Length: 416
Image (cartoon, rainbow, N blue to C red; front, top):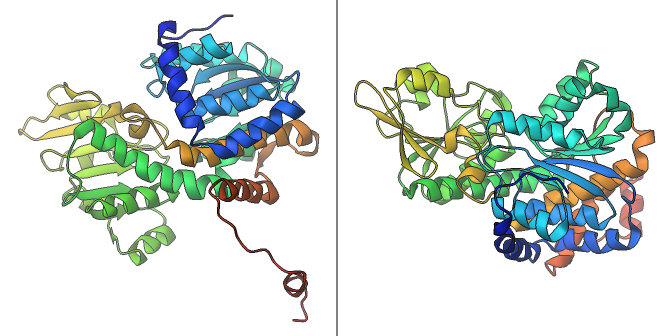
C-alpha cells in the first residue's frame, strides 16, 4: 500500500488517542455499527480531503466499515496529527497522504494523489478536492457521483462554481445542516479557537479587548466564549443584519479602522481575504496578537505585515513576532492558518460527533440518491438532520416531547 506520512512508528500513540475520542462520539459509533451490517459503500472508491485528526479518524473508520475503499489527504498543511495518520496506515490499511508542515507543492501533490485513484465520491473540507478535480482531472469528472463539503468557506466556493455553471455533480453542503453549523461552528469553533490561542500564548483573556472579525456562526461562538473568559469583546462586520444582532447581544460593534486602535487580540472568522490589511497593521498597538480561525490563511495580510516588519522571530511554538521600525511588535499565531488546529487539537470530539455524523450520512445519501440530484449544492434532507439530533439526545439520556395526533392535525390545518 502506498502512503506518505511522517513516521509509521507514531502509530501506537495515535491509536490510543483515536480510541479516546471514539468514546466521545456515540452518534458516529451507532452509524458505524449500522454501516458494518448494511455495507452501503461496498465497491465504492471514496477520495477524502479533511483535517487529519482523531475525530476525522473515527469518521474514516465509520465510512470504511461501510465497505468503502478510501484514499485520504489533508485539507490543511498544518493541521495533520502525524500519529493519527500513522495509526490509520498501520492499523487500518488506509492510504494516507498527509504530513504536518508539508509545503504547498506537497499539499498539491497529495490532492492529485487522491484523485489519481479515480474516486467515485469525494469528501471535502474547503473544496480543494472538488476544485482540483474540475481543473486538473476533468476527464474523470463523469466517474464522480457527488461530494460532501464540511465548511462555510468550501460552500462559498462551490456556490460560486454552481452559479457559473462549472460544477458538474451534486455536492451536499454538510455545513448547511443545522446539526452542523449551529453546533460545530458555534460551540466547536468558539471553544477550540480560544483553546488554540491560549495554548499558543498562555495569555490571560480576562481584561483584554478581543476583536472578533465576522459575526457568522463561528464568530458568534468565539465572541461568546471570549466574553465568558472575561474579555471586552468588539465585533466587526460587513453585514448590517449580523452587525445589528451583535449589538443586540451586547457587543460593541465598529468598523475595523476603529477596532484596530483598541484591540489586544484579533480573531478573524469571515471566510474572506484581506480582513486585516496593511493599513490596519500599521496602527495597531504594541503587543497585539493576531489569530485566524477561518479556513484559509488569507484573512490576515501576512505579505503586508512582512513588508512593514523588520524581520520575523519565533517566540513560542505557533507564535511569531513581527518587530516594526518604531519599536512596536505584533504577534501572529500559527502562520495565520487555523489557530484551533495549528496550535490546538481542533474541535472537541463531542461536537464533531454531530458534524461527522452529517458527513457519513451525506455520503450514504449521495450513494443512494445521486441520480435524482442535479449538479449543484444541496442540503441534507431535514429528516436526516433531525435524526442526527435524535441520536445525540438519546446518547445523552435526554428525552423530548413529540406532537400528538391532534397537534399535528392542528398545525396542518388552515381552519384552526
